[in-house]
Image (cartoon, rainbow, N blue to C red):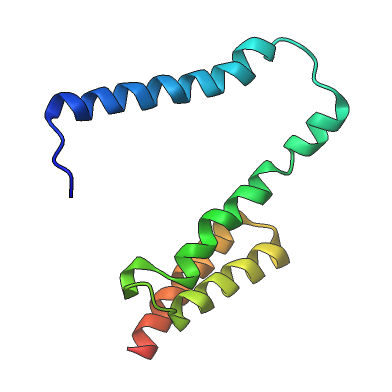
Length: 110
């Protein structure tokens, strides 16, 4: 492992913060007050749908809590969350069903 000094760590944090700001400013600040083409607006609606599965899938397929090995309890919780979310179109209901399923499956499978 590389040992970084405190100044190097803070320098890295500042550089990454400025980089993140510039990436967001390039889209929001420079063209934020202009009308976007209808095609771009239509495609931007699908951004959360594209990003969330990419964030959730690794947590379900190889969770850190199990050392990276597949866990049936987490898979069941993900399926319950998806099913309730689709059936009732309720985010809070899906979250509650997923949490309840996870805890029940962990208790039953342990």
